[in-house]
Image 1: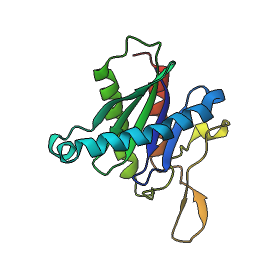
Image 2: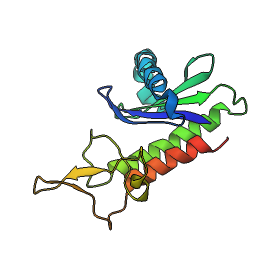
Image 3: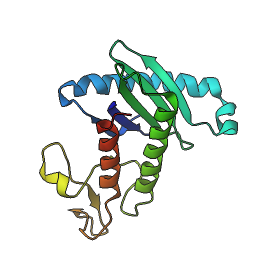
Image 4: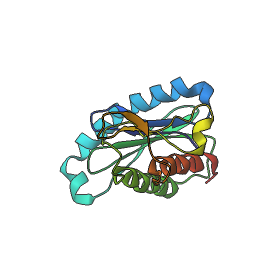
Length: 172
């Protein structure tokens, strides 16, 4: 089970970070940010081979006593980091890889959203927004007035957030 999922921009700032046990949220943020050094090392070690192979999955970045940290990088250098509970021994490498592919596909859907500005944080909208911890996505419209998205607009950010939640809940 994934306990933390993060999407990190090309410039190494977080676009999206979600952790399941909120009492350890700071610990997971630290693990994600320390894993960026390992991601950069793996990318530089692969060099041109990364582009030639089209292999975006970086594999296990580093294990700790309680967790394992996995990485994935897109062609546009956006990084996905997933922290998985070490006690889940049934989780195989190909399952982690497929979870990253699903995450990448959902991220692509968010990028295709015409109301999303690339580089902005990914935040959910919809009915979940009434609960604490679920922020509403806001955007700048041509009137330069900050408003929420219209209810008729398909909420890709909410779909992204729901997909991440399902990855955290499911036991692979």
